[in-house]
Length: 315
Image (cartoon, rainbow, N blue to C red; front, top):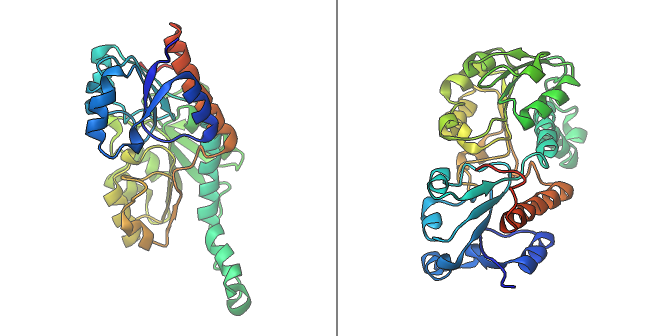
């Protein structure tokens, strides 16, 4: 039987690549020097796209694949896939939710703790001899019992809030509406009002055109010089220029970020700030979760080509 031909947008670990190659003829877009020529050659034969959340598949790539039937995204975010182009042609789209939810929530909490308690700076304080020569590390701020806002109470936001409850924090959230499963927490529909009553603000909402820069100057200023912003969602949800300016001027106390515009080539101004914790977009970066994500990418492709419903459909 002839294997379906798919376009692979970015590299996968060997534990995913080997079974993917066994089931499909995978054309590696990311390895092509002349990507336009590559698409012109293989595009007419492509029936599926295997991609990653940050890579997606734009309208130009979709148009170059006239036989395209399905796009399987390795990641929960699908904002980099042109969904309008997919809808117009009846192309099915899937992602990998749930399997990464708890690891992403874990890293968000770890980032909050590390930044609030100065964990990275304190380790340097020990290793560079400052503890011995200068004495105790400068005092930091507590986490337990303080006020926290969760912007977006979907799967990840809910798991973040559950963990925050373990620190006896005063929890509130914003979303498109109050959630029946979150009656124990305060619902505040306005993100600015949420930020104003928060010491910590977690950004955990899905990204879309409607949420672009939802955390802008007004939200950042409402969070204030004692507040901390933690982003484990998508970079587009935050106005990075406003964030950098606020961090530099002291209008915002601190930030902990796992995602950036243009990553991995982030804005160099971030590297000059001493009040921001930077992580390399690895909230789902555990062996267990990445293996589960890869399996779900392949399971969705297999379901489609077998004529079955997608396991985790977006479209």
